[in-house]
Image 1 (cartoon, rainbow, N blue to C red):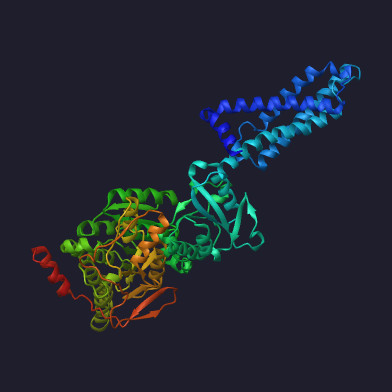
Image 2 (tube, rainbow, N blue to C red):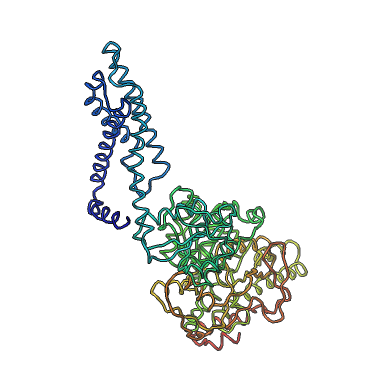
Length: 636
């Protein structure tokens, strides 16, 4: 039977490009079916003997029935339906068209009867029986085409054996699309769903094989090659556990986005690949929105490195807190321009672009004098470890001297809060990038100590009327804090985008060391915790974001390869210059203590010493003289 259906469909395959051709063919089939239904109706009603009184109106009745029913079908959109997707909606349209047409024919018959002195052209019983037969014709033609596509799709073997997770509305709609598109080369072997009431039942001929707990057994028993996750409303932790199990099994996996099901139409093309955030992300940490907003709302906020991974997300979240102005300090012109227009769409007139290099002290001072930010979030820095090993001088210029410029500019205009975005690589640094970020932390500590000492000296040594000027110059009211955290998922140049790019090229995926581990956090969560930390910070606080357990990079590579479906190899290439095997968030001897905010810890018993003015001046002098070396930097 399937071979016959295939031959019929193949015969009309060349007509698919012309929609009008299919519509005319369907109209012709409907007309022929309506005519046949009308003939059968008369023969059934009069038991093969049609009285002359009605027989003389037969041709008129036949022609009128065909025209009226076809017109009603067109009115109800039955010639615009994609036949492979015929369902309840189409059946309702058929019913509506038949009812309207039957009503119109009845009214016309009554009108003819009145004109003919009571002699009706068609008995009422004929109209009613005809309506039933015509509905069967219209519905039958469309269901037959749908059935032909279904038989054709299910009759194919050798496609990619696919298991659908979720047998609800999303899963059933997905199955329907797969069956209607044999060109996808997919063979659905079954469903998994935790709903006990549908376990063992069939959806569209495909069995619900068990619950999500049965994944490993079903994959082995059914030789599953691919997983489609159709759980758009499932909690993130459920999806995360499921995806990690799928990665362990080596299954290529696609996920249905949460918003797709709301459109009422689900297609296999809507499924997306698995992001690393799906595997390693976690629920966003709740923050004290009112407390954070109190430091942002109605104030001028400046963000350095505004178009970077962290900087841009900080800007997006700050915009939601309604600052009076958001100053975007960035050296990358293109990304700055893109971010500005993105923020303009959120709240026009708030964001302000400033194309500025933090190493340019004079321009930075001028920009701060013009904008006078109350809060400064300093995210600008060079972060690529191997590159900074080759360019240690540039690392110092940006990460150390640039930070000093930003702090000076902020202090001069009376900034209330300064936040240094630091990194876990600043802890016991073995590379230039980490060392320069540690020096930036020490600069911040020196600034806090200096202003505090100036204040104490002024209070102890000067008359009351002179104390204010010293206090104002040193501005001890500017709260300076630093926030350390590890890698953020998806940041430019980090391991995840590198793996993704390698997979797009077909591999191989390069891993530095089989034992290497890293901390990971989603960019949105890191940004919101930074904003919370600045709201609770006090002078000289160094905060550490709770990153969870470190992740093995080799395991991450295996999971990304499995879930992507790309048959890529893994190459161990060795640690690059300056890289650690494992990262730490605190130095030896440092302790972490909890704060009032979840997942934000404060460093107690800080081991870092403030960077004294003489050491900093010696560093800058060597930098300007061109005598600064990597060894000099690491010894500071």
